[in-house]
Length: 466
Ligand code: GLU
Image 1 (cartoon, rainbow, N blue to C red):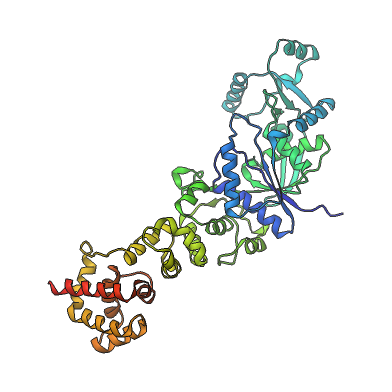
Image 2 (tube, rainbow, N blue to C red):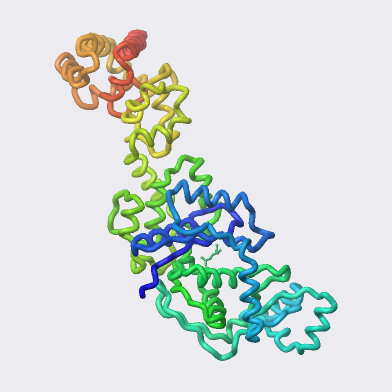
């Protein structure tokens, strides 16, 4: 029987969601959907010192905002301690683990010595050699201890990484590792592996910062006779400067991006192509992105965050949104100027000129508030150069053509002999106090005849005072 494909997103709620963990969520989502499988959500919150409920809530909110739906979960590891205890018990019975009484200070010193002599830092096995009597004595003395998994020497752990291909690790370089912390809670290494097995995860895609954890997790699962998922590790995202992605080189949380006005579809389309090649350069919905997602198209070299690309997809997302969605996005920025009854016409006019929602503000003011060109020398020059006659003629024709823009333009052409820029610049300057911007036909419609006439009159007055 075929095992159904299941991926998972397993964030630790120790901070807000950023590009890195969102891309992990997205790749798992896209892979599951491409293969007709399911995505599971698991919150890895066993580290009570660092996990916070408001981070957990923010992660769930971000996923929902992005439309990344999961089919199973959310499961919370903090509620699964009894299950982990059961598996500790099994490992203890099988003699695969031992209590470790080494203090943090002792371990830090060993580490330092190893690094100084150019050895990879690994646990030297101090407590592996304790006798039953020594263990008993320490336990009676209430010395706190962790539980370590005993890694057999001189063996090799090998697996086929779905992205990086064959991987081979010698156990001599691994060293015995902690699977239960001093406070009794499960270490990431342990509960992450146990849950993947128990939750039927067939494919685990994650950043290659976890690659060296994988042989350890395979050893745990083998010791417990539990199924091992197929792992795929992709290179993590670096900043434009090649350094770790951080605030300093432009990284922001998804929450911050949302507050800045970035659209979910822009972010998703960007991240689906960050370190993953998609020949299709058009804005796609999640179905389209899933259909195009291929593990073989994931790059083996690190992806670099590129704000220009993010902006490109933001612009695409903005331009492809429906007027209703666009209005929702820009509303808070412009509602003091734009009456609800003009929302659709305003959006249709302004949308092609938007990248961020806030870009709509100057156009809302230009149409619905009074315009001024006193502090815009280039606009004043255009109006001055066009002269009184031009605006008087425009006003007369507008009086006849009303909101028929082609009629206004052809009438003006005929009467003034002007065309192209020489005609549109002065018209635009008078109607909007700008030299570039949305289509004039749409602007005229929104202004209405009366307001347009007032602006032409203002230009007449301005031009005649010179
Ligand atoms: N909780 C881990 C993290 O956020 C999950 C790693 C994994 O995907 O296996 O890094």
